[in-house]
Amino acid sequence: MKRAGLLMVGIGLSLSAGLLAAGPGYAVNGDSPKCTLQTLKGRYLFGGIATLLPPASSGPMLLSVAGYHIFNGDGTGKDVLSAAINGQSIEKQLANPDRSEYDITYTVNPDCSGTYTVLADGITFALYVAPEGEEVIVLGTTPGFVLVQGPSRRVSGR
Image (cartoon, rainbow, N blue to C red; front, top):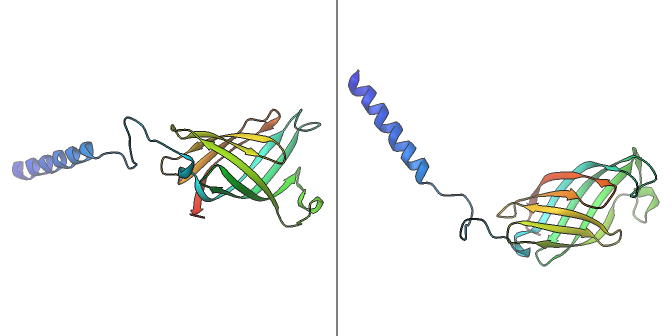
């Protein structure tokens, strides 16, 4: 019995030492991951609800939205989405009744934070990118546009 107990302790110590020696699962340059515009590249699905307040709207409203971001890896891209305000589709007011497309620009800092802007409306967001670019979280930064969205997952490299 003592021998079996010692064997189990030995196996446990060996496994623990192996886990302690394992490194992080992403490329590290110095003490932290390094991101670039290329880190954020591909198609990312998203969906969520935002609250619109003055000055973004005349009064409190709920915006629901679903679609995908396309980040080109060079600071440009496109959002393709469907949206409703207070449950009323806004797509029927636009040229394409099924979806809307908006050109975007974005930045990515070495610490994997960044910004994102919808050019047509001037709506701005803060970005937080996973070190390998596999996910992104978006935070609304335009006054009156209250939104936290994500993490949104990359579903395609283009």
